[in-house]
Image 1 (tube, rainbow, N blue to C red):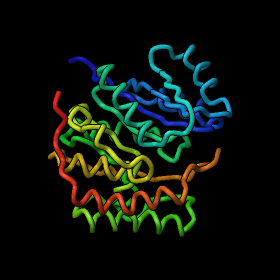
Image 2: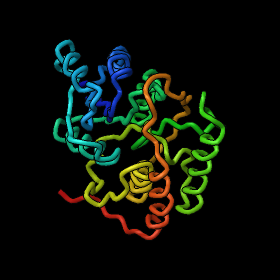
Image 3: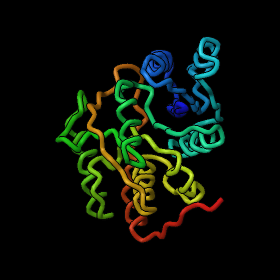
Length: 243
């Protein structure tokens, strides 16, 4: 049986402290994962580090460079389109800062192989599994998912999780041009869209650890987008993309 092709998409902006270490950690996992780094014009030289590493991993490490900060959602959509063009079977979203543990990558892929259409590395399906976050941020994140579950009527405990593995058929079905939220709410919109299109989500418990190197890219504006965007999602109609 032919080995499935697995891609990890890592969006970056000023991640020079982390990008080499996270790339090597992913490549050390079983399963022959490939990486696509999508860099939004990092002035700290993140892309230059990736280009150097590409000489060592020419067939497994790829780089997409974009001009300026265009938003997390647009980075992932660009990555999804690239992954579909290149024939990947499983595509995982992952942060560069080790808040998502590379050791969990095989578990997320296995969950999809065992019947889920997409799997979520969940911080909240078994209580609260977050390390080194301020209590205020934990509460904000946790109750954001509670809010989403109540408004949208879904049973996903970690609606805002950014550690997600998609099977190819999910990405083929979603109309990327209709995705409206670009920041924090992008993760919510993608999960809800998949559910409305009839796909199955499985949550895989993980431990989320706050970054040790570099600085967070979170801002207050993305929470506002998510709050109002969720309400709009409740009344939107969803259709599978046609070829």
